[in-house]
Length: 232
Image (cartoon, rainbow, N blue to C red; front, side, top):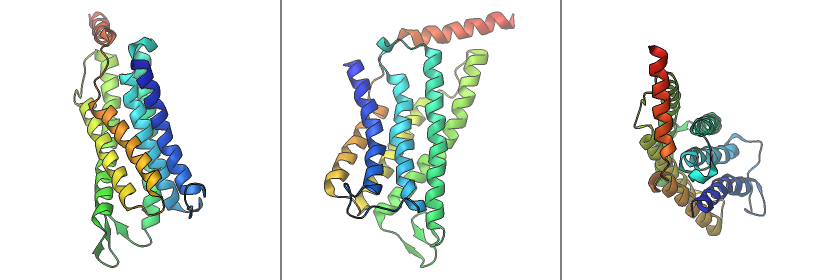
């Protein structure tokens, strides 16, 4: 079950941005595809790549069945690479929506030209999204400091790092589901599939029990022992 679940999560995480991309650009998925030359088109594509895909896979690195045989240090480096890639892509995704909304001065779910709020689903999408983006940036800095401290001293810092990551994925999933609610360019079938896939990765990332691997504690103890020997 463990390895099978790992493969399912990998496929689902990659399928979400693939389906969003097709939904935005392909006539086979939507009667009115968005032009690739405008800022807005790339916002949902890149955000779906950053959050439901790469961040889920970042969590996945620590949730993989131990039978894969990856060393803890290799897992940490893979986790870091996936999460930093997600951060970089989400910043570009935010730039896309910022540039798209700049002419109309539409920010935070509010139109500053007409002085009107957008419908509730758009407001929810925006505020869940902003919360996820801000916390993700903070999480990235804490993750780098956490890894550096573990390698240098063997001490675990920011022990809430994993719990915060789960919360970020939940916020991003809520933002994604709100976008599906108000987006009018897709049929109900595509929306339903994406909603189920997003719900699956959110549940997996935030609530699925982590496989037991005694190597994790052994690795941490080894690092701490090496640091103590070095400091003597």
